[in-house]
Image 1 (cartoon, helix red, strand yellow):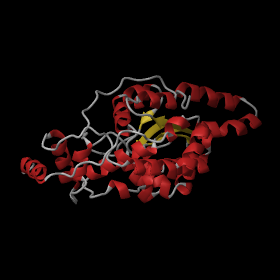
Image 2 (tube, one colour):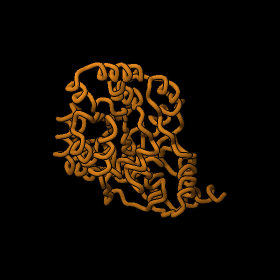
Image 3 (cartoon, helix red, strand yellow):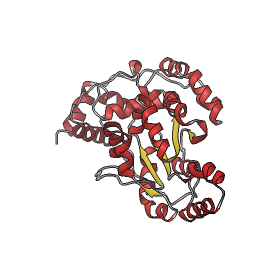
Image 4 (tube, one colour):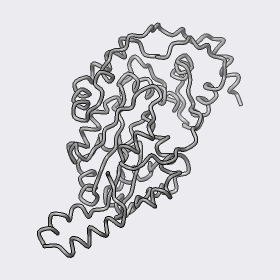
Amino acid sequence: MIFEAGAARVARVLQIEEGASDAKTSLEPQLKPKLILHVGLPKTGTTSIQECLYINRDRLAGMGLRFADRLGREKGFGHHKLGRLLATSGPGAFIDQLGRQDAIVSAENLSYIFLRDTEGKLAALADVYDLHVIVFVRRADYLLESAFAQMVKMGMKLNIERFRHAILEPAAIVNSITNVIGDERVSCVLYTDPGFDSWAAFCAAAGFPELPRAEKRANVSMHRRKTLLLSKVAIKKRELAIKLSEHVAACDTVEDDGIRFLASLDKRRSVIRDHELANRDLCERFGLDADYMMAEPDDDWHKPKPITPQEWVDTLWLSRD
């Protein structure tokens, strides 16, 4: 189990105080406050995990584990602002804000932060906390589709056949963490599609019983031709881009051709091959299903029909408000 209740902590302290000096020396590292750090790679169920943690914050507190302060964040349930504090002000500011107590922190931006600058930040946290990191990884081709769709919803004009991003390299993110704290302090979980229960998997990785889950929210999802339409539009204002994506998802002005994937078979196969060695190593070290992770796609794919002028007119006309 990753964390222990406060009573067990007190008992261990008393045992050390009554024991020999050599026992004190060997057990002192175990007296660090526990920190479960969920490095939430985008598109691996992070948002739903964060909401479940938030609604269970009192139960977690009763188990001796504090759900960290979100620093006034109005949207979402994770610790994005804590991650930003770590990135901009350094580990000292993060530690001062979090405090020296058993806690849990979950933030998507930690994946980007640790990919760029892991050693100093993570090592500083490991000096203060008994650290355990939980990270979910996903098949490269599914991650490609999901990450692409998420970015075009945010207003980015992209071409999926040329799309490359650091988030498509989860092994690099995991390795940047294990290089500092070792494999034994990391729980690497394979997010499988479809119907993966990310909350149950998270509870198992964290070592606590499966707690009540949040009410399932409707996700802004869309078929591939709607994603294709959005990928042709660049919108600088995030709020406007999100509003348009919600409108496109809800309207019926763009025909669904019944094909799931926007990326071609060649693109999806190449993204799997590009990361094969690193992902196979990850699977071997953490006991993940390599056959699932590496299986080459072989579905009945064809190129999507271009968005017609009428589809453009109908969609944009309905979004005029």
